Image 1 (cartoon, rainbow, N blue to C red):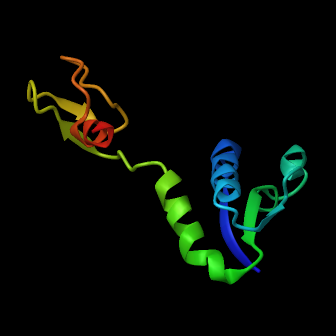
Image 2 (cartoon, one colour; image 1 turned 30 degrees about the vertical axis):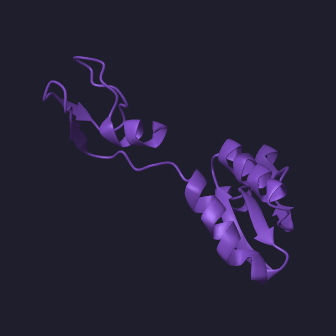
Image 3 (cartoon, rainbow, N blue to C red; image 1 turned 135 degrees about the vertical axis):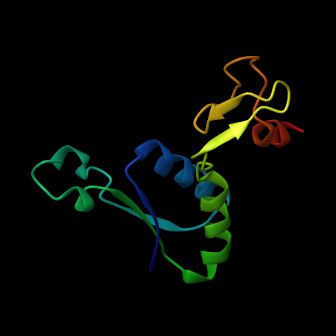
Length: 108
């Protein structure tokens, strides 16, 4: 067995699980119900973990995880429409409401 993924965001872990199911990749979930013990146990021991049952699936499973990992929008970006500087966490320009270029490219 090989640990594949763990995260504080249980919704993200569920997304990865759904994609693994869709790809028929066998896995095991650890700490699925340990979230209720936060505060009694160290937080690291309460995170849901996804473990691959067979390491031959590792390359495909890693592709799935990478595809679902949130994009890093730290820093700032400049709007191509009006030239205004925006904080990285925003997907629209605050001044003209133009979609961030990196997000717009994903729609085509």
